[in-house]
Length: 203
Image 1 (cartoon, one colour):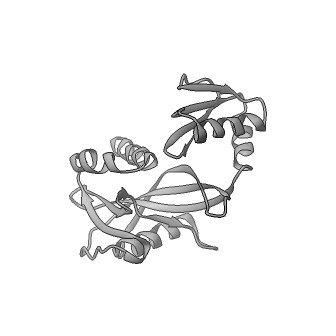
Image 2 (cartoon, helix red, strand yellow):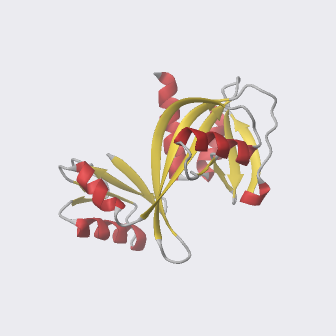
Image 3 (tube, helix red, strand yellow):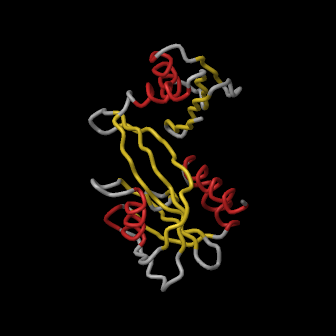
């Protein structure tokens, strides 16, 4: 199953109907174009494209976009708080585009250090990959795949926002603060990955 966010609306690709607001059986490439059109240009908020061969559907879907790979991390401190950044008025997690020749892990650590000013974060487990779509100024459609890792930090807190990247704040948040302050002012993908992270902690 693949979840992709299109302007904060959910597109789900799965083997079976998921009883979302709209279900479309995968027939061909055109099914995916119709699905995107509905999410981009109508009031439909969630849509499911289903078919037996989920990997074929995903492969066809990727051909509609230029793919950008990114990596980021969910950093915890000894108090169990999570590190967030504020960019353009929304809470987010530190992440960014992978550079040529970098592994996902190297990229995630570099981005955290650059965006938050923290040094010596420790890499943990891979959590999941999130997907969202956006359009460049030149009209090119991008599918951004962000690979997320657990990380821990137990040093001197040198955190400071990377102003030149539009980041205005770096803050540690506990669970109630995440639910009350962050979730109402963040992206669907961020909610998704934080919940995946919390589920991992329970295992």
